[in-house]
Image (tube, one colour):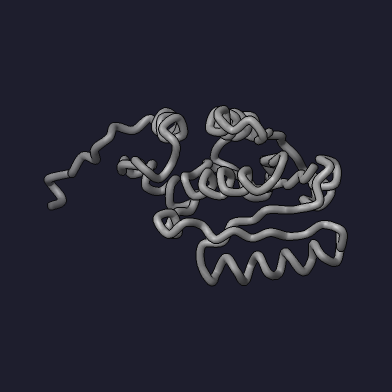
Length: 170
């Protein structure tokens, strides 16, 4: 049985993440999506909220499971019984960072293989940081995040869908 792990903070989960999850799930017997605690990043959503958002998104994928983790990703991969770590790539900047992490992970865990999947072209511009910014400013997130994630963002920001313009400053 091939077990792979896709670790990330998923703050929030995007359609780009889902693209990688769905494609990776088709390649392996079991895919564990590891939601990384990462307190240093000061996540927007709590760990529990991020796990629930990912769980809801993957309900139709029978071989995908979701679990929170802290510490080294390679330790989580081992604990999950995995031999493969999945990562998604969008652009050159992702490649450089992922390459550095891959070399470190290879040093820490030479028994774990890294499988990088290129994000589909329609999602290459997406990042969780941009999603949060668009949501904060009341922009439309259609096609960028699953619907339940868009709703959670809207509730978290508690902003109307449009922006008011201060006419005295125009």
